[in-house]
Image (cartoon, rainbow, N blue to C red; front, side):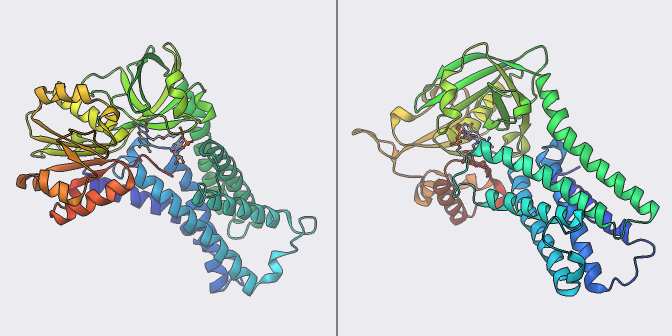
Length: 439
Ligand SMILES: Cc1cc2nc3c(=O)[nH]c(=O)nc-3n(C[C@H](O)[C@H](O)[C@H](O)COP(=O)(O)OP(=O)(O)OC[C@H]3O[C@@H](n4cnc5c(N)ncnc54)[C@H](O)[C@@H]3O)c2cc1C
C-alpha cells in the first residue's frame, strides 16, 4: 500500500469507528417523541464519546496507524480532535438545555439522577484535559505531571461518560442495541488495558543495558544501549524512540529522542541528548550497566523513505544534528554515492557536536559540509550569522531543487529555511521536518 492509500485507509477506519454507534443505534425504531434537535443532540453525544475513545488509539502509537502520517501529525490531530469532541459535548448539552431543560434534572448531585451527575463530571474532566493541554506551558505544568494528569483524567472521564450513556439508556434499551453498545464499551476498555498495561509489560520484557556514556560538547551526552536477550529495534536512519531510564515502563516517564547511530549496525542504538530540562539534565549522570526501555522506532523523517532521490540536503541547528548523523552514518556504512549537502548551524565552533566525525564522514561520502556559526571567533572564514534565505541561495546548487530536504532545528530557523526554499522554488513535498517538540 502506498503512503496515501494507507492514510486514506486509516482515515476511513477512523470515520467508521466514530460513526459506528450512530448507525447501529439509529437502526430500527427510535424512541418516540424524539424530534430533530433531540436526535441531533444525541448524535453529537454519541459521536463525541466515540471520538474520545479513538483518542486512546491515536496515542497508543500503533506503528501501522502512525507510519503513513508521522507521529507529530497524529499528535496534532489528537489535540484538535479533542477540542472538537468537547465542542460536540457542549452543543449536545446546550441543545437539551434549550429544548428539554426538564430532563437535565437538578444540578445538586444529591437530587440529580446519578447518570446526569456522571455526565456533568465527565464534561468537567474533559474540559480540564483540554485546558491543561492547550495551555500547559502557560499554566507552568511540568510535562511529566501533565502527562499523568492527562492519562488519569481521560481514562476516568471516558468511563464516566460511558456510565452516563448507559444510565440514560436512550436509544440503547432494545436488547440487540444494548448488546452492541456493551461490545463497544468492552472494546474501549480492552484498548485502555492494552495501552496502559500490556504495552508497558511488553517493553518491560525487552530491556536494554547502557553500555557507553560519552560526554559531548555543548551540554550533550551520547548514550549507547544494547538489547538484553533480544534483537533490539529495527530502525530506519532518522527515526526516534521513546526512552525510559531509571523508571519502570508502567510509570510512563518516557521521553522521545532521535536515534543518532547508524541503521546499518542494528542491535546497539545511540541517542545524543542535550541537557535542557529536568530529565535531560540527569543524562550525564547515567551509569554504564543501568537498565533502559525503548518504545519505537517511530517517524518518517528518514532518507530511507526516498530511495529514488538524486541527492539530499540536510539542515540542522545544534542538537538537531542527531537524526542527521544517523542518516549520514548509515549512508557511509552503505557506501552511498549520491551528492549530500549538510548545512549545520551552531552558536560557536566549540559547541559544534560531532565536528571531528563529520570531517571523517566527508572522506567516506560525497558530502559537502557547510558550518554556519552565529558567534564565530576572529579568523573564522566560513559562513556566519543565521541560516537565511540568502545563505541558502548561495550554497545550494541548481540541481538541488530535485533533492530531498531534511530539516531539524529551532522554530525560527525552520521558518527561515522554509521561506528560503520556497523562494528557490523547492516543492514543499520535498522538505521534511523534525521538530523536537510535540506538545
Ligand atoms: C521526535 C523528537 C525527537 C527528539 N530528539 C531529540 C534528540 O535526539 N536529542 C535531544 O536532546 N532532544 C530530543 N528531543 C527533545 C527531547 O524529547 C526533550 O528535550 C526532552 O523530552 C525534554 O525533557 P526534560 O524533562 O529534560 O525537559 P523539560 O523542561 O521537562 O521539558 C522541556 C520541553 O520538552 C518537551 N518534553 C518534555 N518531556 C517530554 C516528553 N516526555 N515527551 C515529549 N516532549 C517532552 C515539552 O514540550 C517540554 O515543555 C526530541 C523530541 C522529539 C519530539
